Length: 369
Image (tube, rainbow, N blue to C red; front, side, top):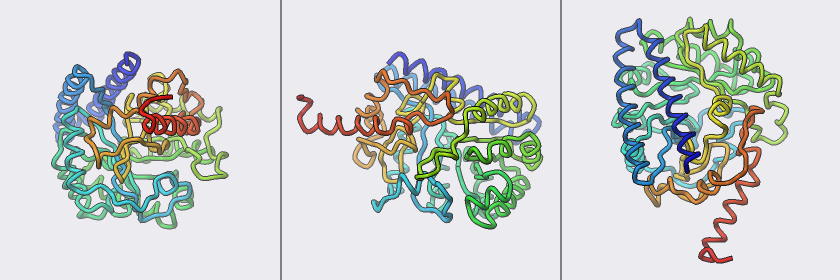
């Protein structure tokens, strides 16, 4: 437990460091400045709520990934969501989502990443998020539905930050996401900038696009277009036959050098996974620093580890945090190292599956051998 608290504390310090960076980036714009100060104040309240939860024996990660829908309007090559999370089960109802967000707020969750599928295919999502201004929401979207009406909604919901998916330039993006996708993303960026909406981009880094996607000329051009947040996520080969797309060790080392340089020289915020987890001691999944709730309510260690022994349809988020699977992962002496730039739980997916199986067998026997 102490180790988990130390990691969570480091993650929390990192979170406030991120917010202070955003404050520095937006201090020249009074409208943004007021928003960021409000978010920073809300995050401090969240930290106090987490401390109160910890005092009564409930460890609350500051960060939650919630995949709001399994539906998507694109068919991207190698998409982890379509491969790992496809299901015919009903998605969480609006009523359960509203309660889930409220539970997260009351427990002290500070940031929630909204993923999919395509989150904007879920009608009423912005209304649900609007009711919980205490949480900072990152909306990971392919941007194809960001018309003027959607952008106006975002402008009026400042704690909901759109993060637009790009794979590099036009060729790289359209090859993975479909012809014309890149052009529509750039059009959305222009509209977001015109409406003065704070936004970012997200790129899945592969051995083929890493050099271009993290190059200084490209990033400077995007900053000029209004992008102030860059998310980099190393490719996980969930699709058979794509292991060669994982960044190579020498590329991971170069990424570290480039990130250090960009953070010093560019007026933008850079977040990289699993790179930033390494600095905090390794994998932060399974509730150490974050967890994943899929579209059907399963509470999982992370999006790339689709194993679960608890579902929020049947229980509260607080009860789900006590997942026996999470406890087995966190208390294990297995080293979840990500220094090679590869997802630790994906590398050890057979081990995680065995933990689920052993837990199921223990439940059947009442814990008897």
